[in-house]
Length: 243
Image (cartoon, rainbow, N blue to C red; front, side, top):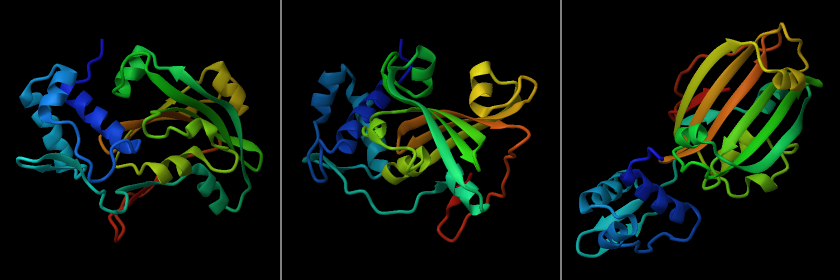
C-alpha cells in the first residue's frame, strides 16, 4: 500500500501534466471539483495541493476564474552537482566509463516508497562504472523517475554522464545524502576491480526536482582510490557545489 498522502498525489498528477507539456503555460487546469472527483478527495485536500503548487510558482490561482499553469521563472539551481567526469578531467587524467545496465524496471515496494511512487511503478535503472586512466573510481547504481527524464534510456552515457544529462533537463533543488564505509557485494567488487578485503565508501543520494523525487542512487568508491570531502559555501548566485 502506498504511503503517499492524497494531496501529494494530486500535486504529482498536476506536475506530471505540466512537465510532459500536456498542460502548457497559461492553460486552465482541472477545477477543484473535477480534481476532487478524480481523486475521491475532499475540497480541503485539493485546496492544499493547489495552494502548495501556487506557493512554488507552478500554477496561478485566479479567484472566480480557476487555476492556470504558470510560466517558470528562470533561476540558477540552488545546488550544483559536479559530475565525476568533470572532477577526473580537472585533475588532468583521462575519463572513460562502462555502461553495464540501462533498462526499465518495476520499483520494489521499498524503492517506490523512497521515490514517492506507487509500488511496482515503472522506473529507469542504470549501472555505470566511471574510470580514471582506465581504473574504476566510482560505480553508480541509479534509479530514475521517468516523469523527470522520459528520454533517459535513449541517451549515450559514454558521451554525456547521467549527472550532466539530468541536471540539464531537471535542475535539482533538494538533495539527501548519507555516507557509510562497507565491504561491498561481490558484483560491486567485480565492477570496481577490487579484492574482497577492500572497503568502499557508499554514498546514498536522493534528489528532488521541484516537488518530485527525481533519482535514488548509490555511488560506490574504492577506499584506496577515492576520498569524499569539500567545503560548502554559497557563491554569488547562491549555488552549492557538491561532487
